Structures are given as structure tokens and as C-alpha cells.
Amino acid sequence: MSTAVGKGSTLIDPTFLFDFSVAMKRAPLKWGKTGVRLDESYRIPAFGTLAGRPHYADLRMGWNENGIGFRVEVVGKAQMPWCREARVEESDGLHLYIDTRNSPGIHRANRYCHQFAFLPIGASVKRDQPVARMLNIHRARELPTPVDTDSLQVYSNLKKHGYEMSGLIPTKGLTGFDPSEYPRISMWYAIVDREIGWQTLSLGPEYPCQEDPTLWATVELARDK
Image 1: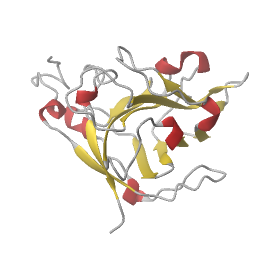
Image 2: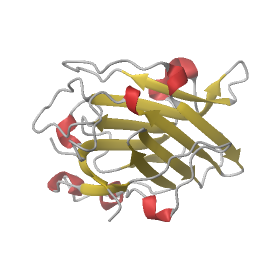
Image 3: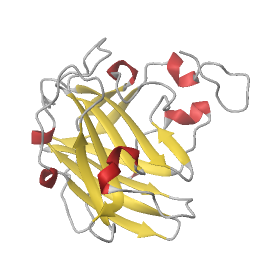
């Protein structure tokens, strides 16, 4: 599949030419009043910039045997995020895809593949509360064990020109998550914003990343030395 990128001459997204591998550090992931705290050493890259996609968010992620947590700060906005609890898949926020077994060569998701959405607002009558959801992956051959929404933790804080948000996915929400036996997982993320575009780990929405795990990056679950 080919796609035009940027202003003109490049037909293939440059990130399509690489198999990306990133490290995710082990972290305490203690949940506090403002979610989890992760310093800059936990930062996850945005290789989508190689194809000219925007980079407006600082995403940090960590793991331990109890699950995977993140913290993200979005800047550069002039408008409120567009978020609707009833339309989570279309909403602004962090859309996260995880394969706990780094399954090789599968073009349709299996039971180890997960989709999560974290929105900074959208819940409650006033739509001013954050949202965390586990969603089904389109065309999946199998589905992971569902997790109660209450098991997913989320915190957000709106700012003048953006927002910060933190979330935590417990191990019970990650079918097959076993870092001691499977220290590699696959992952793809998109920080979606109707105003300023998509920031992605690698390929953009022109490719079927939201349903094809072979397009996700490998993540090494790094341990302390």
C-alpha cells in the first residue's frame, strides 16, 4: 500500500521501511492523586515524525508485573479536546494497541491483542471527566478477556493550551501479560487530536495499524541492571 506523505514526492511512508524496537523501563507505577509519575527516561518516541506527522505530546510509559502505566502531556492546542463517551473510537486522546506476546506474522488480532482508549474528558453529564475503555479490535480472530472499566485507572487535567493525562492498565486487563516469560510485546499508539492531527509511534492512519498487529513496533520490557 502506498500513500502520499507531506508535500509531495514521497510515495511510501518512511516508517514502513523499518521494524522499530523501543525499550519500556520497569517502574513502580504507584497511583496517586495525579496518576503515575514517570520521569523523562520513560519517554516513548514518535517515529511518525519521519513521515511529517506532528509531535506535540510527551508520552511516557512504564511497566511492572502489575501492569502498564503511562503519562502524557499534550501542548499547542487552542481548542478543547473533542471527546464523547458514547463515541470513544472517534474521540481525541490516547489510543493504545498492545500485543502481550509479540505474535509474529499475524495480520488479524488474536486473544493477546488489546485496544485501549484514554480520553481527557467526555464522561459525566458535563463531559468533564476522563474516560478509559477497552475496545474490540476490528476484524480480530479472537478477543482478549474483557476487563471492567472500573479496573482501568485514569486521571486528567486540562490546561490552557492542552492537557495532561495518566492511566494504568492492570495485568488482569492484559491477557497473556507475563514479562518473565515473554519480555517482548508489540505496541502501536496514536495520540489523536482533531485540531492538530495524529501523533503516532510509527505508521499513520493511512495504514491499517488499528487492526493489523504486524504493523506494530516491538517493545522490550527492560529490567533494571
